[in-house]
Length: 269
Image (cartoon, rainbow, N blue to C red; front, top):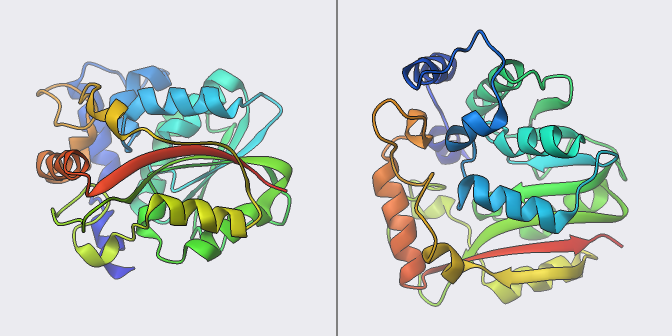
């Protein structure tokens, strides 16, 4: 965990974000839109496009209460709240990301619809049957205890609630290129094979509605939001160090089938 805390630490994150917004020609004193921030705050494979696709698959409505686990700067939470009208609770293990998320919630006028909590996915700070949707993008690869993770997600979902996710899984050979966007060192990359992931989800009580490998679709798509933006443009490099190296290693790992990208919609019993 110490390695992960360091990996996701961002010194002076508020100052970095505000400086980047001004450099991109945005005025933090005016209400910003989630779309204007999308290149900055969707820190997961596929960026905003992947979030839109998962949102459509999850069929989220304004009456749904959503938990976003590993929410980062809360870009997907703001997308869901602004387009679906739902309320979102964010759970994030990085204190710095929590600070950045709260800042961006205020700047977009969405702080009343999104609440940010610092905590662990293995000890979700909510009662049983609290949420209609649990949302997670590129988070589980940092969590070794998949059984506990899925049990906690199932616990906080209402009966019939949906778990919507995209995730990296282990491929055909051992992951060998580091650093990666989610891990500086191999010990923090906790990948399991696709079939094992599905099996553990089933053991936890989940029923699969959709489970698919999107690796090739991602490789054939654009690299937008995964490589450093040009000077004066918003991008992940504002708070992700060595982004070009990390993103390049991730893409090479996908190309060589060391890792796979999957997404799914699973229903709680």
